[in-house]
Length: 197
Image (tube, rainbow, N blue to C red):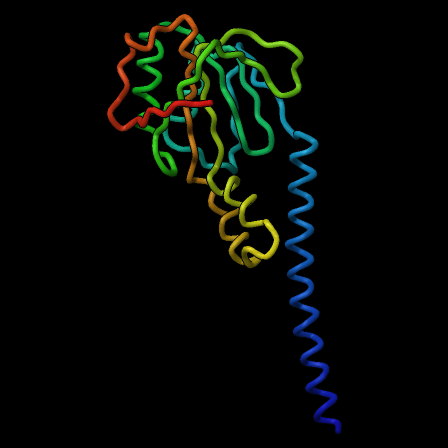
């Protein structure tokens, strides 16, 4: 009978550890959801160099791209950052050329939109005209949202993705109704052009 009690205690400990891991995943998911709802972010102003935290490893060339002199605004929310630019066809060609050399997670993308772009953070009430923008986020951050959905992955899988800060998603958005004529822009061959909504 004593042996059975010992076995029962071992099983109880294993169940308790499994329950703890489940609670940790759910807690992390709730905290991430609260972060997104709270919008933990700030603006990048035109006259200030974007200083990026030393503990995050950005792709080579990223800081030079976002600190271009024709950046008119920008913001970040949690791990996602957006930068807005104005300029000429020559400026945009140079931007795309530099962008095409930065390592990205999947592919280099240029998304075309109708109308005129607006440089505006989610919390701003008004914005300014912009010709293009750059969206950036670690792929790990985007993958964590999918991995944190109920019953899709283990805690170890979520932790492995969270540790990878070097695999970046960078997407350029351009508005065809603005001042830059796309016919005068040279698009590098490795940049895939898509039509946006």
